[in-house]
Image (cartoon, rainbow, N blue to C red; front, side, top):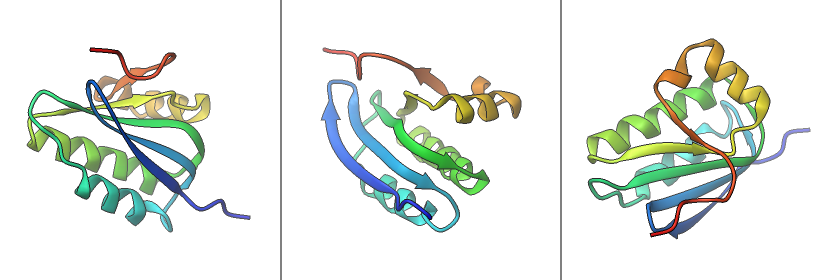
Length: 112
């Protein structure tokens, strides 16, 4: 049974944070896209995508992560993937996206 994607938005000293929980697949990708499109990003900020609650991510989900990075870069900002589940981290590394994304683990967003 599919777990719907649930996204919550919060603010951190570094910029907006989206907490993702559930499954990021082709059926749910538009949910992430809409959330990312509505995030206000200022130059120098980071959009943090906290993936600690992510149960599954397929290739469409990875494409949406890349689209979020493109949108952030267009705003002069960055994307940080936080608490990436081991299986997804392995996939991102195998396809070379560990060279593109910034990863962070432990402790949440850094303070001021």
